[in-house]
Length: 109
Image 1 (spheres, one colour):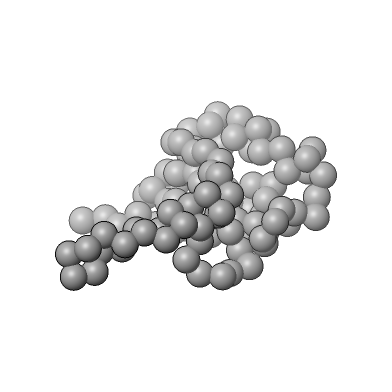
Image 2 (tube, rainbow, N blue to C red):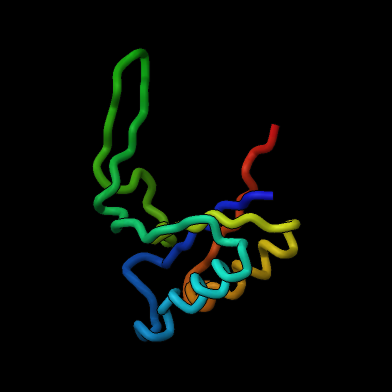
Protein backbone atom coordinates (compact mmCIF):
# COMPACT_ATOMS: atom_id res chain seq x y z
CA UNK A 1 0.00 0.00 0.00
CA UNK A 2 1.24 3.51 -0.79
CA UNK A 3 1.44 6.20 1.88
CA UNK A 4 2.20 9.90 1.82
CA UNK A 5 4.47 11.11 4.61
CA UNK A 6 4.01 14.83 5.32
CA UNK A 7 7.17 16.07 7.01
CA UNK A 8 6.20 18.96 9.28
CA UNK A 9 7.90 21.40 11.62
CA UNK A 10 6.41 23.66 14.23
CA UNK A 11 6.67 27.05 12.55
CA UNK A 12 10.09 28.50 11.88
CA UNK A 13 12.35 25.49 12.17
CA UNK A 14 13.45 23.02 14.77
CA UNK A 15 15.27 22.95 18.06
CA UNK A 16 17.91 20.65 16.55
CA UNK A 17 21.27 20.84 14.86
CA UNK A 18 21.57 20.42 11.08
CA UNK A 19 23.30 17.08 11.69
CA UNK A 20 20.33 15.84 13.73
CA UNK A 21 17.99 16.78 10.89
CA UNK A 22 20.09 15.24 8.11
CA UNK A 23 17.59 12.99 6.35
CA UNK A 24 20.08 11.50 3.88
CA UNK A 25 20.83 8.40 6.03
CA UNK A 26 17.06 7.81 6.31
CA UNK A 27 16.63 8.32 2.55
CA UNK A 28 19.46 5.87 1.86
CA UNK A 29 18.04 3.24 4.24
CA UNK A 30 14.46 3.47 2.98
CA UNK A 31 15.52 3.54 -0.67
CA UNK A 32 17.71 0.49 0.00
CA UNK A 33 14.76 -1.29 1.61
CA UNK A 34 12.68 -0.48 -1.46
CA UNK A 35 9.97 1.38 0.45
CA UNK A 36 10.77 5.01 -0.48
CA UNK A 37 9.48 5.84 -3.96
CA UNK A 38 10.13 9.60 -4.07
CA UNK A 39 10.24 12.69 -1.91
CA UNK A 40 11.44 16.25 -1.67
CA UNK A 41 11.73 19.25 0.57
CA UNK A 42 9.28 22.09 -0.01
CA UNK A 43 9.74 25.85 0.24
CA UNK A 44 8.48 27.66 3.33
CA UNK A 45 4.74 28.20 3.81
CA UNK A 46 5.23 31.90 3.06
CA UNK A 47 5.98 30.88 -0.54
CA UNK A 48 2.73 28.89 -0.87
CA UNK A 49 -0.27 29.91 -2.95
CA UNK A 50 -3.71 28.64 -1.99
CA UNK A 51 -6.14 28.15 -4.90
CA UNK A 52 -9.93 28.02 -4.66
CA UNK A 53 -12.71 28.25 -7.25
CA UNK A 54 -15.89 29.98 -6.08
CA UNK A 55 -18.81 30.70 -8.42
CA UNK A 56 -16.53 30.11 -11.41
CA UNK A 57 -13.84 32.56 -10.25
CA UNK A 58 -10.31 31.44 -9.41
CA UNK A 59 -9.25 32.92 -6.08
CA UNK A 60 -5.67 32.81 -4.87
CA UNK A 61 -4.16 33.64 -1.51
CA UNK A 62 -0.43 34.10 -0.96
CA UNK A 63 1.10 32.22 1.92
CA UNK A 64 -0.57 29.63 4.08
CA UNK A 65 -4.34 29.93 4.32
CA UNK A 66 -4.56 28.84 7.95
CA UNK A 67 -2.45 29.99 10.85
CA UNK A 68 -1.15 26.74 12.28
CA UNK A 69 1.87 25.79 14.31
CA UNK A 70 2.87 22.94 12.03
CA UNK A 71 4.10 23.73 8.54
CA UNK A 72 4.85 21.15 5.87
CA UNK A 73 8.53 21.10 5.03
CA UNK A 74 8.61 18.15 2.69
CA UNK A 75 7.04 14.88 1.67
CA UNK A 76 7.89 11.29 0.90
CA UNK A 77 5.88 8.63 -0.86
CA UNK A 78 6.48 5.17 0.49
CA UNK A 79 5.12 1.72 -0.30
CA UNK A 80 4.75 -0.62 2.64
CA UNK A 81 3.05 -3.91 3.42
CA UNK A 82 0.72 -2.26 5.94
CA UNK A 83 0.20 0.69 8.28
CA UNK A 84 2.47 -0.84 10.93
CA UNK A 85 5.42 -0.80 8.53
CA UNK A 86 4.54 2.74 7.38
CA UNK A 87 4.56 3.90 11.02
CA UNK A 88 7.91 2.20 11.60
CA UNK A 89 9.36 3.94 8.51
CA UNK A 90 7.94 7.33 9.59
CA UNK A 91 9.26 6.92 13.13
CA UNK A 92 12.81 6.59 11.79
CA UNK A 93 12.66 9.93 9.93
CA UNK A 94 14.85 12.44 11.82
CA UNK A 95 12.12 15.09 11.83
CA UNK A 96 9.85 12.78 13.87
CA UNK A 97 11.98 13.65 16.95
CA UNK A 98 11.55 17.42 16.54
CA UNK A 99 8.40 18.01 14.50
CA UNK A 100 5.96 15.45 13.19
CA UNK A 101 5.47 13.05 10.32
CA UNK A 102 1.88 12.58 9.22
CA UNK A 103 1.17 9.23 7.56
CA UNK A 104 -1.68 9.19 5.03
CA UNK A 105 -2.69 6.19 2.95
CA UNK A 106 -3.45 6.79 -0.71
CA UNK A 107 -7.04 6.22 -1.77
CA UNK A 108 -7.35 2.87 -3.48
CA UNK A 109 -10.11 1.99 -5.91
